Structure formats: C-alpha cells, structure tokens
Amino acid sequence: MDLTTSTDPETWIVRPSRPPRLAAAVQRRVAQAVVGIGLADRLALLERRKALHASITEPDRIARWQVDAFNQVWQGATKRFRFYADWQRRYGLPDQLSGLTALSDFPVLRKADIEANLATIARDASPCRFAGTGGSTGPSCWFPRSDEDDRLLHSNMYLGRSWAGVRPGDDIVLIWGHDHLYGFGVKGQVVKAKRRAMDWLIGTRRLDVYRLDDDSVAAYFAAICARPGSVVVGYVSAVRKLLQFIERSGADGRAARVRRVIFCSETVFPKDIERVRTILGSTPLVEYGMGETGVMAYSRPDSTVLTFLWDAFHCHVTAGEELVVTTLQPRHFPLINYGTGDRVEALEGRTTLPFRCARIVGRTRDLIGLRLRDGAIVETHSELLEDCLDLVPEVRSYFIHQKGDAIDIAVRIEPRGELDTVRRRFLRVVNQQFPGVDESKLTFSWLEGEPRTIAGKRQYILRE
Image (cartoon, rainbow, N blue to C red; front, side, top):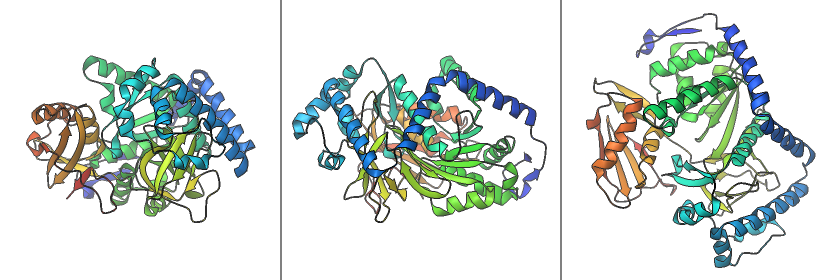
C-alpha cells in the first residue's frame, strides 16, 4: 500500500501497491541467520527458561523455586553491596526466608534510596556500566548493568512474547524513542548508524515516536504495510495515533497484515484492545516493564490479564495497591522489595502463583503540541520532553504544563542553578528532533510544589 499525504485528512489518498516482497524476504533470511549465529547464547538461555516454565506449573513448586532463588540473590546482595548489608542491619532483616510472604515485612526500596547511596553502590558494582531510567516515574535514576543483565533482559522479553508465537528475528516495526541516548556530533551519528545497521540485520524497522504529526503517522502506516506479517511494537499513545489515522483516511488496516500489536509503556484500555482487533484484524498483546527491571509481564493472545515471569520476579501488592517487585535472577544489582510506583488492578480471588493482575493503572503519558517558527504545530510524544530533561543531571523534579500552543516547564534543580542554562541544554536536544521549533513558546520556571492527581499519584504532565 502506498500513501500520498498532506496535513489535511480529506486530501489523504490511499492506493494499493505491491510491497517489496523480495527485499523483505531477503531481510528475513538475513535476520534469522544473524540471530542464530550472533545470539546463540541468548537463544540457548531462552530455550532453557521455556523448558523450566513448561516443567514447573504447580503453585507450590513455583513458590519453593522462588524461595531458593531469593535466598541466593539476597545472600549475594548482602555480601557484595555495603548498601544491602547496611539495609539488613538497619531493619533487622533475616539472612534467609522460608517463605516469600515475609517480604511484605521488608522495607519498600525506593529510587531515592538508591540515588542517595549511588556512590557506594557504584564502587561495589564495578566493573559495570550504568543504565538510566525515568519516564512516567520522573527524572532518571542510574542502575548498575552488565552484559549478563542484557542476556537476561532479552530472554525475559522473548519468553513473554513466545506465548504469542513471536520469536527473535521476526519482523518487528518498533515505534520508539530515546534518540537522545545516542549522543551528539560525529560520535552520535556513528552510534545511530550502527543501530540502524543492527536493526536491519535483526529484522527491525525503527520509527520515531517523537514525531506523531499526521504526515509522519501516515508514513509509518506505509512502512508497516511494506512489511506484511510484521509485529508492531509501540507506546500506547503512538498505536492510538496509528489507529486514528487509519480510520480517518479510510485505509484498509487489515490489508497491512499485521500479525501482532504489542502495547508498551502506558495504560492500555479495553477500547485500545478492541480497535486493534477490528481495525487491523490483529492480535493485541500488552507488555509491562520498567527501565530498572526490563520486561516483567505479558498478556496472552486470548486474554489481557498480565502474567508475570515467575522465575525472574516475585511480586506482591501493598495495601495501597502499589506493585512491589523483587528480582530473582542473578542481576548485577538486584532489587529487593522495590516499589514500582505503579498501581495494579488485582484479579478478584486470584492469589496463587504465578502472579497475575488485570492491568496496570496510572501509567499514562500525553501527546504534546510543539509550535514551529513557521507557525505549524507538530504533535510529539511527551517522552521527548522528559528525555530532554533527563540530560540535565541537576534536574531533580519537573512539571510540564501545556497551555494552548505554549509550554511551561517547572523544574527543581539541585544544586540550584540558572534556569537559562537548563533551558539551553533542553532546546539543544529538542532542535535535533524538530529544527525550527519556536523557542519563545518554551519557557522555564521554578517548581514550587509537586502536583498530584486526584488518586494521589505524582503528576508530571498536564495538557489543557
């Protein structure tokens, strides 16, 4: 399918064309070969874990497995990290547990605890690298990460996807962000080029979630149509924009032959699930995870219920309905009774293992309108602004408020510095994505208080 587009929906022309099937077939074969050779150790790990899940299905056996795994992780954590040794002494925590219900008596570990002790944690974790996380839960916090973690994260992702028949090397169309992580200048361009080459080799087409204006979304649909049988993975709001475009343009969504649609990063509503089925004729899946942990849970083709990976995470819910997780894999830096900040909708009467929940509540982001100097307004995912703020290490908290075509960003900076310095760094990254942005419509102010929703959850973005 080929699309000729303009910013006026009434002028969109959708006409059928023959997708480049030969090129797609060649790429699929290359991807399968690259995955088979280059990711052999990861594929072997994935197969071992699939076999484990097939062999242990009884709740009591899962519980015993989790207890043994936790005791190993906890012992290693208190020996290697002074932070956890002090955590154990401070709260009088036992050396091992006979049952993981006792984890509810542990203090809830928070990002702030890790951030306050990062210097000591970093020394004890060395050698390693650090991965930042932020997004819907606020400014970034840094976590130690190793190559072994990468293997575990990959196997977690594809273990959950395997429930829907999605395998490493399958055609993936990824509507994603985080371009800022590639860096600036020549070095940044080299990193981007390597990423594009690797994406091609493994059968992934990466689309820019920061650009969600009508013309961009139309081009994304054309790219999806050129890869029949692909799996579309994207932020919930980006998939919504795609579905809205198909409806307004009169295109035949089913002609794209999308095999699966995986919703990520935000709250998924029943109407999102149903529209994927009716508009695309595809199977919707829901993925849940965080930057700190990677993927933790997936839904299955016949249900939207989230099933957590029981050999990787122990989960329980506090009285306030917050999801608390403990990592059970040999992570470089384990998380013990870690508060996710996410509320879950529990399954009535469901307390057995593996842990399941109806859905994650409260992971919502917004689309933001950026005005350009030529007067045009382009819609972008709010994560662009959050990611730009993450590049300023002094920013400890923020609130993004869109009022008409203007955006005010209130920030708390430690140590307190000049707002103009923060604004210049922020605009440098924004202009990478949208050259010609009207900088007069982007103002900065001091954050006087941290606003919250009616439900009491910290609010980071408001669009009026």
